Length: 186
Image (cartoon, rainbow, N blue to C red; front, side):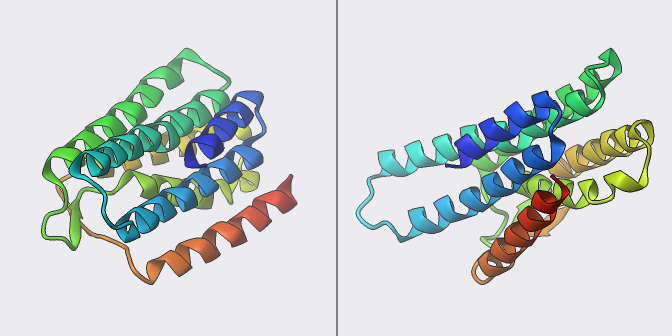
């Protein structure tokens, strides 16, 4: 379902329907949180099944939180050549971040090294809330700069606490509220 949300988000980003693309991104985050929640509660999985699930999750994450934001940037920038480096950086930093996590995991079961890529899917919709306050050109620069900052944080060596447990309720509430807001914008 997360991959479907991301693909729909990509479609609507390409079409220039940014509020619906953002809704796709939000739901990709929600499904990403729930797939981990469900996987941790499944008993009797073999190591191969766990490894397969982890790889599949990372592949979906790169589409949801790397490719979709990159296409949002390209589309919002009217596919101008100057937006290609930013799109490349977004996808590359996401791939590096996910590959690093797949090899090294958490620092101490409580923290990540760098900002997790699904956080991009929570922060980017918040940034889009302010789109109407700026001209298209100004907001495209803000979007570009914001995605570069997020990309730098994804591959940074800063310690970021893992949000888990009851944070799921916060994420669900955030996604539902933001979906309502962007649905109203449509």
